[in-house]
Length: 252
Image (cartoon, rainbow, N blue to C red; front, top):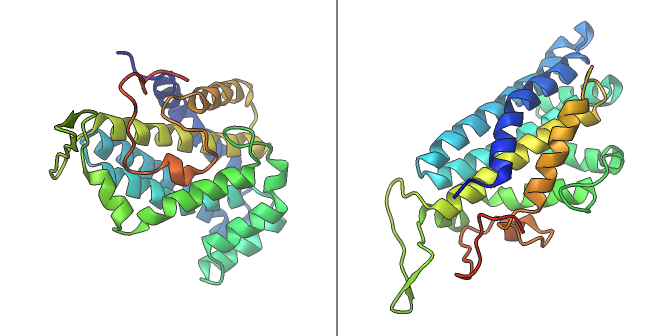
């Protein structure tokens, strides 16, 4: 069966999204605060590296490592978002962050108050603050080894044996459902970075990128893998089972 449409759309956009975000960040560079200007650019490189490595280990069946790397990209996304704001807003906060006087959580609270109301909607019809806040809370359990993270190490075939669940354990136990769900989150990170770059208003040409991101958003939002609960804690539960009559590879 062919992969879901968001798989190929996300892969195609990945090579455009990160250079576009870097272009937008470099428009804001200032010699008077060169160190602070570099922080969001380095954060963008971190997000890109986390994503690339997560894609690699996910394909190898190391799903708990893949989801941990996605959690590791969250703080980077926060700093990229801050870095795309006007210098008078971003530079004092970037300086405080580099001095350990401001956390990424503090930055997100400020963005939710001052910036996110202008961003429009998230993946569905929810405000951006709800979308990103839910995503941050849902990824939080994967910062450290936890029972939730342990759940991503099991391979659970979509069949039962004698009425009991059959779990396959191993150091790299590939589970196609878990792998595809994480790949959808990869596409969501790509969409988020691209959307932030477009929203910044600093790109010389964003028309075709905007169209691609709009299509990716539609495809992710219509995925048969999502429950549309608006709660990413539910969307990111390690163990999910579908009725045998449901093909989770298809769009809803």
